[in-house]
Amino acid sequence: MIRKLYHGSSDIIEKPKYGYGKSYNDYGRGFYCTGSIEMAKEWGVGKDQDGYANAYELDCAGLNILDLNSEKYGILHWLAVLLQNREFDVPSGLALEAKEYLQKNFSVNYEEYDAIIGYRADDSYFSFAQDFINGTISYRQLNNAMHLGKLGQQFVLKSKTAFDRIRFIGSEIADSSEWYA
Image 1 (cartoon, rainbow, N blue to C red):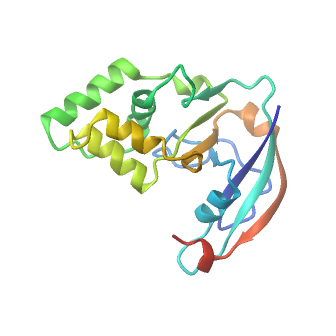
Image 2 (cartoon, rainbow, N blue to C red):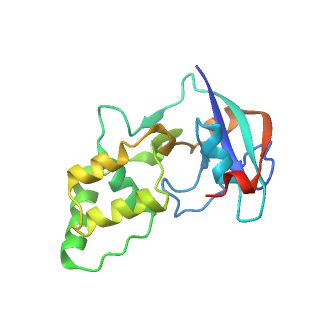
Image 3 (cartoon, rainbow, N blue to C red):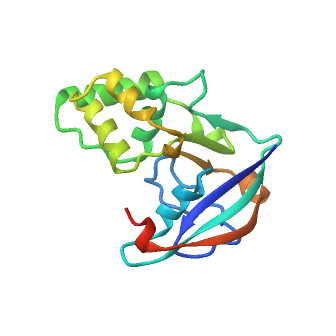
């Protein structure tokens, strides 16, 4: 199955490099993409800086893909993965207990996968996760917030195999005045 993906950047990236990226991103190092060209344009621009929505095709046949949005997983699995990579403010004993409980009971060995599909923890999503850990919002509120739409989902290439299968097919300019949030 061929999947069309987009990556927002200040540069045109014809060949993504395996092993790059920030280790504290949602799913660790990897190449972060989306199925939405609009989301890629948003990701690609900065304040007063235009960017690009790079377009790719990925041959997913035979890839081991972790879909954190599938029936097998829930919001707490996503949150446990996020806790392994992102920095959370844990100001109380309750928050520390919550963090330890999630990591012990909902941890996913995501590093064994070629790619991951899951929510993106931008500032708004991350604040919901942070509020849940701190006991400010309920599980139901967190769950509702995460199901606001597919634009909040990302597709992350993790393995050398996945990087070898991605093919650049072009790019579109993203105008900062239109796409900067």
